[in-house]
Length: 447
Image (cartoon, rainbow, N blue to C red; front, side, top):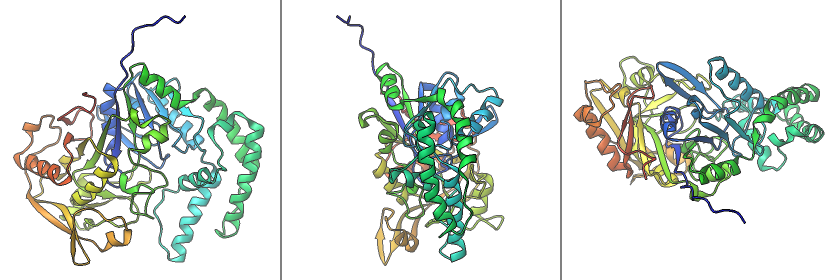
């Protein structure tokens, strides 16, 4: 008979999601919260995501590996909802190892992850080129093969990480999949075909390095939670890039919302205890798509130029300049509802320092009517005229401030009004890039 031991108190788990169009500063927040977590989980997207961490003034950019890797002893998991380019994953591991970060013993990759293969990248790039030459306009993908890999997953023909353990099975599936994509490349997309042998040989080489990190991630997370570990689920991109709930078709290829943390990691939704939404104190967007509060950025001295330059607004993955605009509270209302946000973290407050006037979009005029929440149809969003509330700015610096009462009075009023308009409490405020530049109002790991 099994002896009954002392029951272990289960851990508390937090989901971190972006509430705008990505690039909200999730990486820094995840890194900060990992001080209270024993495991960090990526549950969707691929290496089209970019999270920048600044620790003691040193900048590290991550794309696929969870941000918790920068905390010694923290386990990191790549869940089944993520599409994995094995070559990129090994490259990212090697970059971290070069700066002294131990990765391989702490990283667990779900065997169910679909693989991104070279033909996915080729198809992705060729499609964007065709859209541009045909006049249809680019979607604005990163060209990393993310979308085509997800298409194969949904079509039930994907190569998955587990196939790397079975060379004959891998080769047979690869031949069929390559033939399919080569037909598209050489036909409709008018691009060059790819050869089987180089792809297969390279895949078998990287397989030997990846095999020790393969795992049943969903079960590992179940066991970790049962045994008292706090887990942090790290979302990539942002809510308005969600394939179902975003500004379609100018979206990514996965579900970025909090509810997908369960499906994309292989756990039950009862393990998601707190949803922390991340938003900038203004709004940015990379790539194409509607953006109601967008400001011109080219002319020095304008607000748009200020946000772009002071905020250093360039994509981590692509290096493309991010489009900038005022904070959109009507957009955030949509995100609060979709994600069931428990609390909000406002990032980059310090970028607003020195502006005479600060505006917040509190609704739109659409076809002569007032609406208070972002519409779902992209054409309607394009037709929206933002309705603004104006606030006096502040001349004092907020950079590095770590206490609410130390913020300028006008900054506190601005944040309090934003909180009222979006209907979710502010839990944290980020006042700089470093992990310690944070004001804590309520800790997400507090019961």
